[in-house]
Image (tube, rainbow, N blue to C red; front, side, top):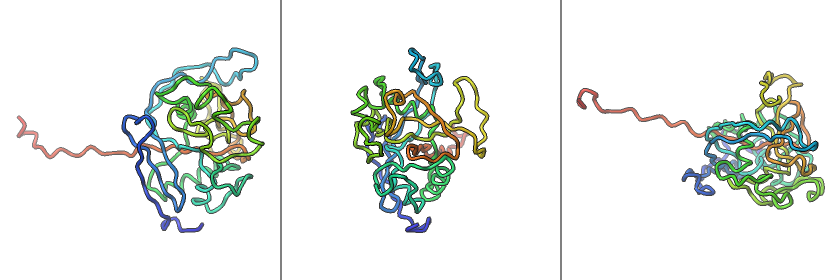
Length: 270
């Protein structure tokens, strides 16, 4: 690494969030020379998934069912090659040499190591998104307009996909963001989640150290087309899969704040 873990320059900057998010600010972090931003998402209840209507629909995308998620932070963009290199000291990407392109060619185990180091550097609790959090955020959270893709119904406008990507990744934040101000949730690279794959309604047996276990990834990629791009579409890969089309988007827990202890004498209040 360019710097030791303990000497890395870390700064925290607050920025006004898109739509105010009830006046909860974005949080931006500076790791060495690389800045990245986490966007607050107010939780809520929504319909996860999609009911098949045509033979071209994927049966694993449904049935649609009601799900509730809590509050969380989400990365404004996928993790970039620059951030990964600053934290890990290397760049595994096939399309390396482009700092603002999403990191790719990382498997679940690589991502766990990255998150552990980032947490040590920042003192915060970064993590994977769950599948439910990912879809809720991609849909725009409580500001959702019901778009098919993250940010709109025009795939060309919001995503790098097969017909406009030139079959490679692109710098983040070049396409239209969604209602929460999130970029590249559709296209560019798929994004790993912490959720094990199973048909909806069937609880997967989580075996996170098993090389054959399959995790959900979401969002489509630079090589996919319209069928793989809707916000409800899900795919999955083995824990050890590292390909040029799967990356990572961070989640982060809200800091735990303790209620101050009361100094009032209960007897004096009577």
